[in-house]
Length: 207
Image (cartoon, rainbow, N blue to C red):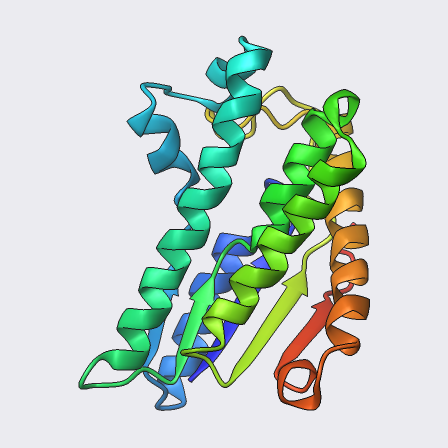
């Protein structure tokens, strides 16, 4: 089984691309499972109806975003485990977010609260999540979708849920891309059995 993760800021087309890839894979006779981001479920569990609700209380949000990241890592792990262990084993799992999206979001929104130990801890959490997924996936591919896109607009929210101001999305996207580049270097130093099973890529800009 292989695992494909799309990475990037909000409104860059990750979920749409995931659905398209699923359809293409099925047309080719592959068995496919998908993992949709658990972010909105985490917000709902906390009684929040939109991203902007959490932004109203910075101290709460700073604690809450640790939970949002951990929730998605565990949800993706569960989907991969189910897909690998099912009697009708899946060939491919596609996810519309990567752990690095969440660390990049944290670094963007809470940059004034970062210290070196927290940066190292978030990076370790992301890398270890990929290592755990290797229990189930022979290959892991992380593909970055850059922002801005041709359909991007300057708006407070593109869908009524996201607080996707242009500046925030642009910086978030840039941080994710930098984190993926650094992760690629970290995995390149690991033993062959690990580094040959993880790839990091980037789609051309849709701007």
